[in-house]
Length: 510
Image 1 (cartoon, rainbow, N blue to C red):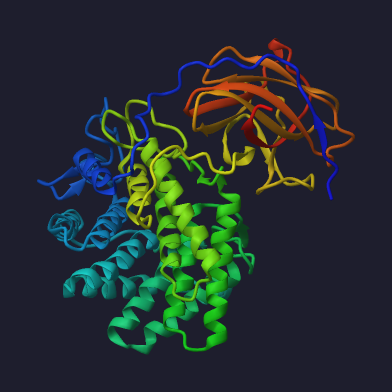
Image 2: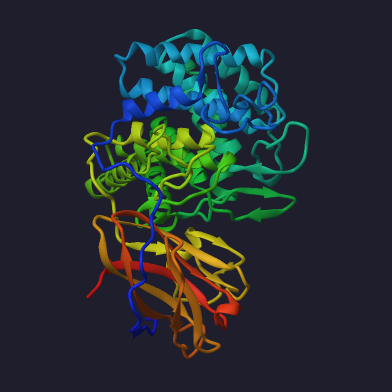
């Protein structure tokens, strides 16, 4: 048991300044979110999605997509097609959503008639989505496309490292989750459609590679292995891909013990993500660009878990609640001008550019959450992990035991360094931010601000060593909704000494 010191700070409550504009909480409307997305990004004349929203003040200067980057590139387009499929699956009677499936496919095929790409994961996203489209529409061309893409991708399977498909067709040694886990799903769907045992055999080979080489064998899913180096990067979409692969393979597995094992693997990985890749229950900001679309893949994995008939009621309720809370939080953070949401689901985006990949992930959260969706503020459990929050000029570590989450922030002694927690409260008023930290080199002073208002110093008393964690309470005054609570280092303001920062827990002031 770790030794915790409860320390109290007697300073005035930090004053509040204006937070970014937010609409008043209302009942989430997935159909409206999809409509806003199409209005911002869909070009029906080209049959393509724009890379950046129409209302952006400047055009994307360059990119891999058609039109010199004006339109979404290969794998973004696949993810956006998946979003269209999410909408069609949610409302099968919506003729416009179903018609859009073919329109997106035809537009992409016109832009990429040869279906050539150096990255196998890009091809794989399209193959997996094509199996979804085939199941929804019964259009044979999607099935044929999935088969052709899978055959093409399989040429990059190599026996080294226990198998697996290479990330790049041109060579290299990297093998990753994003390439191999979606191929498990594709192989299973092709087996189900054709009854060809080769697909089932390859699905098992792919899954075995991912499970034995790219996970910890229990709950955590890593990213890739290259040149003998295992990169233990944590991304939401890797968890989503692994969950989907586990559940797909389970569908075609008859052995009861193996079926139970596959469900357990999916559940453990999903639970790890809920515990470690969230702040107050909302999945973390993974940035724009490719990372902006990662959370949508995890949402598909969680949604698939809720539909598993053998899932225990407690787990089903946990994933259902998570999907609903994330969807409601997304809805609460939409931008008033166009209804779009950025990469941070806990805070509204400012004016300007939101990439289509990023906006699509937020819409997916709304489409995939099981109805009914509750309206109103989402505050979660009030715990915000430092390693999952916005930060600059600091490091992260796992060296000092006793931390929560995936680690903690350290090397927090550089001018301009900060950790910013994006918090949400139901009503305006006084709150207490409890900082969990260690200060083994002596008392540390940092500056705390709310929504950019003037910062005030906060002293975090010394702890006996770096392994002894303490709590320090800081009174704050917050507006209703989202706020930015920033802990920063500025030597000229009197900030001093080293600090390990683990998390912030937000509660009402005693």
